Length: 390
Image 1 (tube, one colour):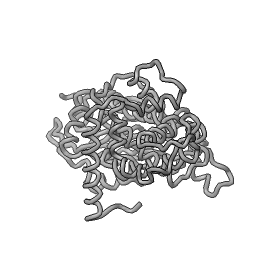
Image 2 (cartoon, helix red, strand yellow):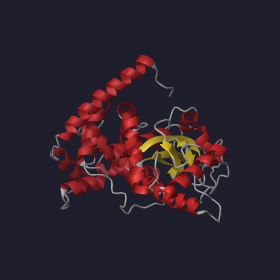
Image 3 (cartoon, helix red, strand yellow):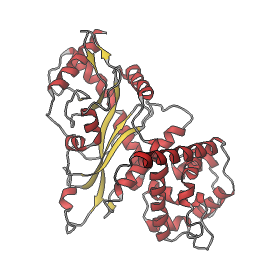
Image 4 (cartoon, rainbow, N blue to C red):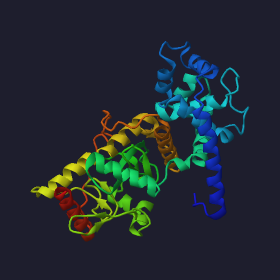
């Protein structure tokens, strides 16, 4: 879709803000599960589970009730446009909560349309139609949950990176993951989706903060592209190169010079003034070794976040059978929005020491990029010296 401009963008932002305010107020009320939840449990299992409601709810929908209620209120208008069009097999009309629940089950269970439909008592075509309506509604109403941080938010992100990992002025970690697909070799242009491990895949590039939130994503690119190529093709790269991002307060280092804001990434990325990668030499100096230690420690948040993300939204895990490659980026985007919403509404801070899986790209080898900008080399060296001189 083309970018929104002028008055249209302002109207969309106003609608999003109003919808979010209404949804947040409703979610804050903290209404306990009622008749809808009990009826849904019976449809799924034939009997109410002995597991406590809250645990049962989160095990099914991968989010607390508060977040579920917020999402329902956010997408209410779009999801209920055809209020009597969708029914259970027994003829009962699906309420708003039913529709959102079915869409979430489709995204987080990894089950087929038939499997999800059978589990809740609806036709598989109903699951398909409701899920796509949900995707469109989330795009329309929830896009404000995934945006680049403002200056105040960025200062908090930088402070956290310095406090926890000793990396001052760091604004996030960039990483990529592969969403694998099952394509026919007879399909036109199928080879472009063939990645380095001989899987058909689509790539998601994400910038992650220490609260495990996505602050920037780009997706839709084929698996045949390397991490460095995807970066260079992204809006993130263009904005950073033009100085429109990572242009906040600078760090004054020990020799009196200044270092701007930066991201960190693994060795699959080029070394740039605003994207610092680890030293790849074997014999490292004291300062280089110290930088690599801190860099490695901070960078782990990205693979752990991507692993948790794919484990939650199992629709994106495993091989998808001939997906619509025009719709798939939009589904990935909405799963990222849902990921951020759950974090935004959680009542306790993320425990970075929590034992999450980190293998989001099983059997994928580490890519290595040898590109190194001269200014990037200088910035990394200055920062490394600063770290051991403090």
